[in-house]
Length: 404
Image (cartoon, rainbow, N blue to C red):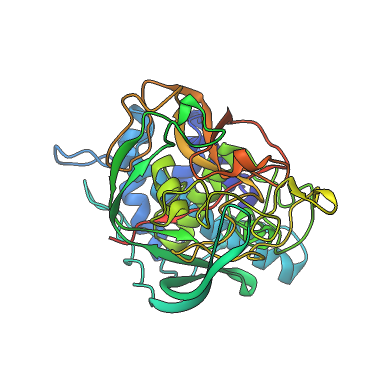
């Protein structure tokens, strides 16, 4: 007899490549004896040996390890079991007894049926409704005095999550920009050079860094590769950015969100991040040559009170957006990017993709500075790297999505 919780554990082991003969036998027995039509159909493609020369994915579980198609279907089964386990336990106030008696809803659109050498038959993701929003953009001079304030519009879509929580994704058009800092930029470093022209395709980026409320919703979903803490942050608040998350944590968040929405979410490349931050400007900050305490959360200075320092994160969206409609690109939290650590831009990709070779894979790039950073670290071109496993109250992230 195998309970739902035990079966979820078995699926975890199989997906993680830690299966044994007993796990495979239990999975085969459960699938072959399930009373649910969808599960019985799936069992044929997971555990049966084909009569023809084509190889079913079930043979790969036993003979060749595990492939992506197998992972996809096992994860969908795992999701169904998780939901059934939670719902049944809450109704009966007791553990579920027999998996073979459970019949997951046949209308669950996330359930996968796979045929030989085919892609999982998932419904395509809905096309999001694109809407326009208005925001203010500020420009300042070298004294920090506001010289211009205007209204702009940008396009975005809303990704609805559970518990009334949403993600706002801003559309960023294709274009070219000069990445990195010129020699004469104050406090710039050699790792920000050589400057080079990067050409990017359109993508969507989070209007804000991921908040703690958004994190909590996704962290409750079944794991893909690793577990996530529901409340990792040092500073607590639903609309504060999530922090104390490693690069691996941020990557896991993207994987779970992608599986939940059937849309591909990921961390930005370093080039995408800087392009989005600059928003067609070439100054050290998108609002001008300097940053002031009215325009970002960082370790700032004020002539009257000397040092102005929040000493922690604050709610997202407190300062004016850049010309693309993105908030909090300077300060607040360092934001993880996908790229490996490299000492400079020699040999960097010119197409906006993440730089995932010839560098230090154990270290990943962070951008934007934080609540604890000096002004120079908050510049558009400023780069920082840290071990991918490190968590810190200064480290958060925002996500990107490509709709085409």
